[in-house]
Every structure is written in structure tokens, then in C-alpha cells.
Length: 169
Image (tube, rainbow, N blue to C red; front, top):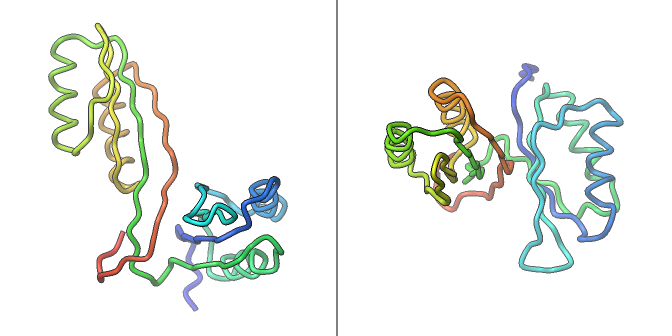
């Protein structure tokens, strides 16, 4: 068994009830598991929510996490995305403040290159929206931090679904 520490993904179907998110996140903090990202939203069935969880762990710890999640009454289904082809995206907003005219021109080029949208625009600021993989968003944030001094970053966490074709993340 490969026991290297790496990023792993789980998707959960859970009952859409008050306190379920708290119980799930409490499981991670109570066992000192690293919760890297957690995104949750209602599914096509309003009584069911779907969570996408990213964690960094070894194989043994990851198996324990899945077992403990499966034991929870509110958890309907646990899907391990480790060996599955998945479509996964994350939303990222970046507000760049105190821009010059040249800065704005560069930001429009960056937006075009990364297929981002400029969703708000002010006299000396720009708000960009990126919907892409977390890895690409990491690269965008790194680039913008190097190029611009005054940025504000908000990330929504990844959501994923099993791919129909054999494409991966």
C-alpha cells in the first residue's frame, strides 16, 4: 500500500439538515485530520446536500476518514475520488486595487489568457472571476501576487463530479 501523504478528494451525499456540516467538520478537527477544502450545496433533491472535501493524508488515515464518515447517520453515501476520473472546478475572485491604466490593461490580458471574466470595474480597481482547477487558480494567485501589490483573494473551494468520459481533473 502506497502510504505517501498526498491530496485526496471525497464527495458525500448527506441529509440536508441543520448541524450536519458542523458534525462533518467536527469529525475532522476532533481527529486532527487536515481539512484542506470543504464545499457544500443542495442537490436536485432539496432534502440532500452534496459535499466535496479535500484533505491531505496518507492511505491509512484516508481509509479511517472514509470509515468514520460512513458511520455517521446523516451521511447517505461516500464517494472516493482517488481513482476516479473527475470534473473538478473552483471559483476564485481576485480584486486588484490601486491600479494604474497600464495595470488594468495587463489585468485584461491576464483575464483573457486564463479565461477569466472581469465582473466589476472601478476608477482604480478591477474584480476578476476565475472558474478553473485549484492548481490553475494557485498559479493565478501566485502571478497576481508577484505583479500587483494590493490584491484581495476569495476562493470558493472545489466541487467535483464523476466524469462521463475518461477525462480527469
